[in-house]
Image 1 (cartoon, rainbow, N blue to C red):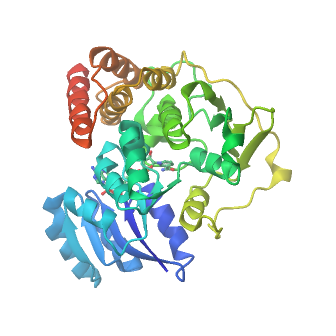
Image 2 (image 1 turned 30 degrees about the horizontal axis):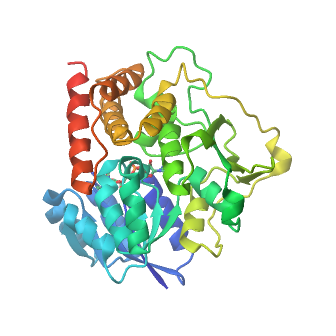
Length: 385
Ligand code: NDP
């Protein structure tokens, strides 16, 4: 029986993971569930899954959470604030931690899980984009097992399973992208938040949905792939594949390509990350090849979707450019969702922040957090009044 902590339990990834866990009560028990401010959602999950601890990121809501648990007859211990998130990520009784907080806010507890040598199921891509070197170093030092949840990286992990180190030399990663809701739309100036969040194939949180619409999501994934699989930027390609059936591919020097396929359902990579090296059922529908029809591929349009290009540039540039890119993107996406910035203003803001702020390579977590804070300040200063 494995004890699991879910950071970001009330979100799209958190609830999908709990759906998989509920299918296998003999294998997994929930140690801790966390949320930022969704008190009722967290209390409902506590009643259903019976964790020992529930953590609310916004510590001022601890009292309301206690009350919500009492109303439901749930009995978990309640804690609040960032230190409590770290505590449940590294608690000795925990075997596996799902990092599913959105944004760089998830960085510190994700690092804590890595340092404590947990099985780290990584969905929180902003953490590895902001602090890739630190996180990979923490995984090595702590002896953690890092299992990617992002469907593309999960696919590559599957394609590389059983491939010897010598065969990996020179391998090229091909990340697939659906192209998002605006693949065929020429004028992106008047896009609304609801249009941007209406993804054609995946149901996700609002921030990653906007990232998918700008293709920044794919850019963040290029950076994530480089850290996870230790592959240089020149050997990471992106191809648009609107059907989202092939989740990513690995091409070997002899021309062979391995692809991983499945229906677009995050429960499949979550089940893989939970059970690896075994396999368990996930609830995802099977692929019906006879009904699939055709699978198509095209090159991404970097002119309409410049964010993907910015991410490649940030990875090439090194230093702290990826952390700055991520922070600027988080600020710009939030402003867009609140109606304070046009859709096309997201890319424009990020480009200006990257030009204005080029800090040196951070040597520790405090420096990463300071760069993140400063980049947010610069980005906020560039938003329209
Ligand atoms: P959601 O917005 O649906 O959920 C985010 C979760 O994080 C919620 O539980 C939320 O709590 C919590 N949270 C938000 N802000 C903070 C904070 N400052 N401190 C602590 N907790 C916080 O996001 P998703 O589930 O869509 O995405 C989560 C992560 O997984 C992202 O990094 C995303 O890029 C990645 N990912 C998501 C995929 C998907 O299909 N959704 C696919 C691949 C990767 P509350 O509910 O209280 O706000």
